[in-house]
Amino acid sequence: MRLGFIGTGTIASAVVQGLAGRGHEIRISARSRANSEVLAANIAEVQIAELQEILDHSDVVFLGLMLQAAPPILAALTFRRDLRVVSFMAGADLDQVAGLVAPAHVSAVMMPFPGIAQGGSAIMALGDEDLLERIFAPHNALFMLRDAGELEAYLCAQAILSPVARMTSDASNWLAARVSDPAQGEAFLRKLISSSLADSSAADLLEALNTPGGYNQRLRHHMENAGMGAELAAGLDALEG
Image 1 (tube, rainbow, N blue to C red):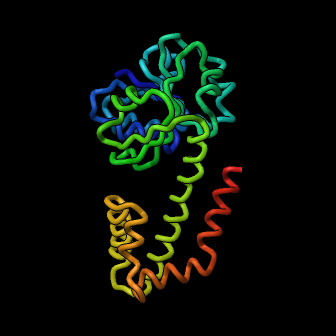
Image 2: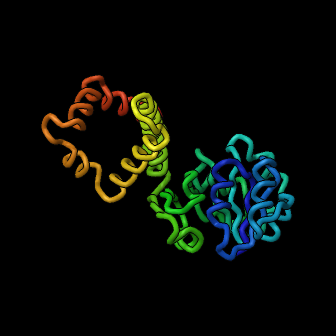
Image 3: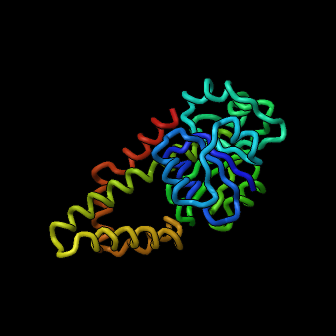
């Protein structure tokens, strides 16, 4: 397909990297020039183009702009009626994006993660499942949502990723002071967490790690008694509010 990207920040750049070598013709904007130049230099099918050229020569255009910056940038452009648009802009639902790119067709709102660059990533999305499957499956896992309310709830819940990364980093630092190879220690923890949750539900994993008096149960009880669960729920509620 002919794919265009307006905005090449961290997430959009990761998406472009993940699409490399799959037969697409990809045009990207010079916005976030440092990223766009690296992508164009390292991926043969990627070229940097002016914004209107991207719109004129693409079947699907991905919007990787910050929502507050988008209106004046997009208002200066002319969108074709047959152009399909997919938005990465957090905080904008299908109707909001449609108002920015009329008369083009807004196919989906999609929230990818940096891991999409390597494949195997979770993607939450609202809209045209068939189109997203054509572009991103089977290399990634699509989680299609029902409406804007579900998208907002998923956006809040996915924020668990940062606290989990922080906890992993803190545990790695604790381990580093006690072992001969700190890098191996962190690699072990990352692999342990990702592989354990990949093939098991959270409830099943908790049960498997609930050996009375075991290390996992003792640390979990310590953290629960310190308010971990209540603080997490309060944080999610604050995001939703």
